[in-house]
Image 1 (tube, rainbow, N blue to C red):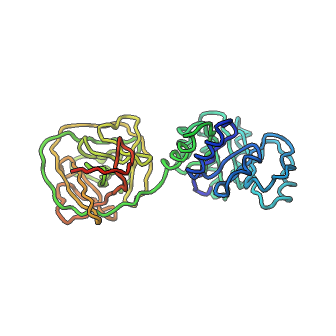
Image 2: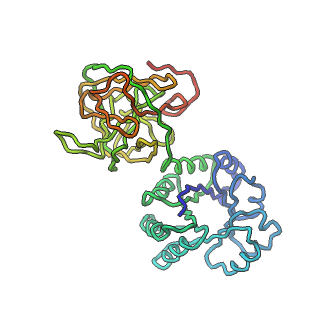
Image 3: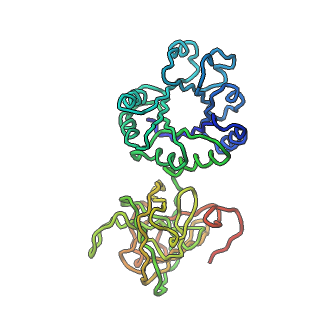
Amino acid sequence: MNGQKLCWLDIRGAGAAGPAVIEEALHQRTDGIVAGDLQTLADLPPTVRRVLLPGGDGWWRDERFPGAADIVILPPGFTARAELERAHPEVEFGRLVEITDATSLEEACHAARTERWSVLDFRDPTKIPLEIVIAAATGSKGAIVTTAASPEEAAITFGVLELGSDGVMMPGHSVGDATALVEAAHSSAGELTLTELTVTATTHIGMGERACVDTCSQLGESEGLLIGSYSKGMVLCVSETHPLPYMPTRPFRVNAGAVHSYVVAPHGRTNYLSELHAGAAALAVDAGGRTRVVPVGRIKVETRPLISVDAVSPEGVRVNLILQDDWHVRVLGPGGVVLNCTELAPGDTLLGYVPEADRHVGYPIDEFCREQ
């Protein structure tokens, strides 16, 4: 297992849409394009891995082989592998394993431990066999690429056992498939560049509705959600993992902010806190900027006294956060230091995030937008 998230787009069924699908895949910097014929691969630029998954016989005698293919994934039952490897040491070979029962599952585990490339096709919807293969391949140098039928399945496959498959091979039938696959890979991991914000003022503003976000995950001591009144900047609100004198800890909860607030979501989007609901996705972020997608289990909206916190980034970007006006509601400072919101004062330093673009219906957009 190498930890790198690979996106392979399988265009064998693209038909007439093939050229457009390939163009999008190249634009999205898809790691590999999978084809069943050498001519399609020969036309690809060297910026993408050219993966041959042959469906017929005699392809190795084609004059375009091996120059057109970087990787060859051999189908089940192929018997001439040793000869091909001796003749073409410049080509990387791998193996396709179709998992349908206990015997083929053991074959998949062996392939994952020994092959440079293992492409695994699980016929049953359960992810337990993939969990077994990932565990069996711990410490191996090869890469596991798992087939997925959709972007939703790809996202789940990338996250199995938290480590996930090294890559996903998904069919590319039409324009949009490559983009969806790349987004699925990015949603399972990644980092944001956090910045230090300086508090300029705090104001008690009276009663209003605030939202607690209860996730379906135990959040870490330095994990929380990025929340803000403006799309130009957010503050890292920590989960309730730290002890309190009058109530038990709730590591799944973030007392996030007033209902109008933005929260950073997967795929570079934002949502309003009021838009979140059971089954939605949120982006958990830790003090080092590492992210992971967590499902939302519940949103609690209640009327509470509110406090407004104003801050500014080193570049002069103004940030605002409105929270429940209570000592137990906390944000994070540099190094994951926990700060009680009612004790914040001008000059204090918070951890935050300043996006590069403004927002329109939650998506980044390069346009003029003033928030105050």
